[in-house]
Image (cartoon, rainbow, N blue to C red; front, side, top):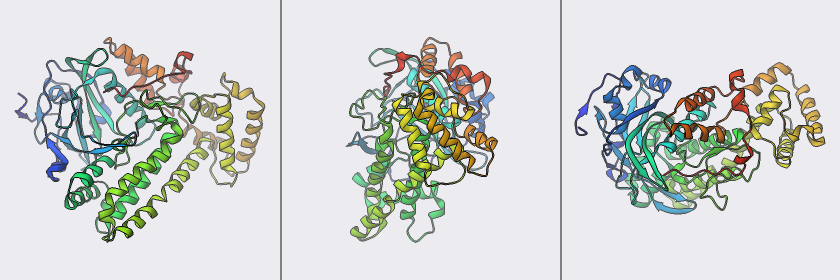
Length: 490
């Protein structure tokens, strides 16, 4: 059955331009069939935006596509090769448990990768079983859709199916496959692979493809590869600032988890910070704090340096000149990031214009929050609503002094208090995927109850609503979550 390509009525319009690249960059690989696939959840709004008809996506043929048991017409399944730095150490990697089915062409002509995660072993599995468990796949679904609701560039989740099979980790778990949607799955690590094991011509082919797919404004420039580097730096400076502004901690910022498109990718040990602490780490494997909250901007710069290194042969025919060009462009990251972050923090505090002391005002607030172990999200939502939650912070002398300075700052701008409140509501989510809420949803889902997850997803789809039906999801986590740890879920 798997070899037979089908044409469904669901609106699939698949192509695979990545398969036109040099063969060293991928391997043709069909998904491994599963015994009894069942659809757990379907992202109907995303499906519709892709030009898919949801009434057909739930039939047996399309569930079989989501499971890898059948291949839709136009699909050319491949596993992508890449290499990367994992916690600072260089390794050959690749899609060890993911198959790229192809690119869905939307009614407006956009292309989005359709990838099955947990769809079986590939040549890059390195001894793994190529499978995934239900909990981690639902976790990626929840967090990626929450990020989308927050307005942060991200890969998205189209569907999750159970496989009818078990996977063995520390325990026996229910197997599942996630259908992931991305602008592309080209990573910094994809370029690292091409630079390490490919020829200059193969590296150039990858760069040309990336420019055509994501940065077409640079195609006709004298040196489009400098433009490529500039644009990727800009996108990452913007993305990481957005993570910091909402307290998101990726957890495993290896170079294979940095997408050239500027989307957040690979939701493993990620989580949202509750108590404000720049040292916060959630990942159980990040014992040294390499990817702690405060380290995300410098690690992004570190990853971009690795990207720039791969482009050196293309930036100039003189190596020293190439290094000079790369260093010049990389030196701009810190300023770009800081400008994005400062602009975002001003918005979180209802500030429209610029004053030289704004950064001190912001840093003073963060320092007080850190000292009194204030909840990050709740502090800003309380300021937005001009009310104090049950947190020690709001009763301190330091905060009251800061509050007076902040109000004086707001009074010095032309915009009204109502305009500031509106700006703050659009910048400060009242709800995030609280770790205890996510775990609650996953625990129920693994027992066959998906209603808790569905309610959570509904609330997270509009995190800036400040709606009454969201109040239960604004509550602070129980003390038992103060030392919360996450796992990669492989």
